[in-house]
Length: 414
Ligand SMILES: Cc1cc2nc3c(=O)[nH]c(=O)nc-3n(C[C@H](O)[C@H](O)[C@H](O)COP(=O)(O)OP(=O)(O)OC[C@H]3O[C@@H](n4cnc5c(N)ncnc54)[C@H](O)[C@@H]3O)c2cc1C
Image (tube, rainbow, N blue to C red; front, side, top):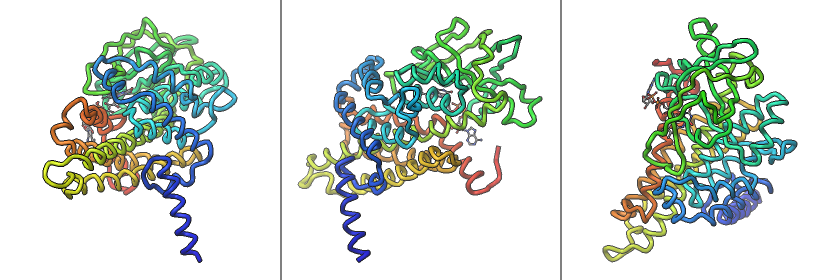
């Protein structure tokens, strides 16, 4: 009896999943009505922006205004904003589904990228740690598409985030900020920035992780100069060096508690990792799907190239690894939404998703042969986009170091 029930349950799961993604995956059976709507809405958006659109935006280095407008109109920038501020009142589980679907349906990293900037750096950070006044000021606007950016990375600190030297010094009722940031994405369009700065010098802090604070800074500001960095991919959005000189920030722009910014920003950085993992899995699924379609048709000897195990097995292997990474990433998102510790899962999901996504695009390119190198077939663009996830928002080595130390309990090497 149990066996029969299990069989019919699994058959239903398969049918449902094939409707959603065209592939088999267990967890999607558990999607709520709202989550199904998010997936369907993401598919609807993606339908309007085919490969030609993304090729052109990439080639012309042009911001995809129509796509961004569609995300706003569908309510995606407000997914994690509480309902009382005009948002969807949902969580990272829904955000991950939206980002993954946008990517798997053809939008590459773009959906994740823009939603991360606005909804995660802005919406989620303020929902988690904002005062009522900050929530009232920003959240309704974020739900309607106010753009944000994150000012964390610095040239001299890099991966050693606690070593940042941008300083916010209190003078009267305001802070005066000086310093330099590096790789700040979306800073040209952002109206708000989540800025991470030192409020207590590292040598005076009780421990290295104390003494950082978060600020909500309105942009543009004459005290904040930005210089674009030419980059490898994601050319429809710009990334900048940032010079901050005597920037005046009012006292009430402090987000959360003074000197506890590192602990607050983890509530942004873990969801950021989940966002990139979602996009990796999505791009990987897209790359596999396109390679499979191609490999069924393309014949150079007697049989389609997809029948040769040298082509077929790497795609099958990538598919299996992506489905495993998706499940781990959903788990990370569900833990975060329940207010539970999700650091281990967020980092492990990122390791799995980076390997799986990059592997999928790599083998997709191989299946396309020389055509994989041609712009017309899109794989080279996904390759340029997905390479970022090994480096940002956290490098692959640092996610492994986190797992080594915090999951396995091994000694820290640095
Ligand atoms: C396109 C793009 C967009 C970005 N957008 C933003 C943004 O919007 N906001 C923001 O704040 N930042 C942003 N970043 C910054 C990104 O998060 C950093 O580049 C990343 O964290 C790595 O820092 P780094 O480049 O200084 O590398 P480094 O710290 O110099 O590291 C160089 C290499 O050494 C390795 N390494 C360093 N220390 C160790 C160690 N102890 N053990 C093992 N390996 C180690 C690293 O893993 C890496 O491979 C962006 C970066 C890029 C490329």
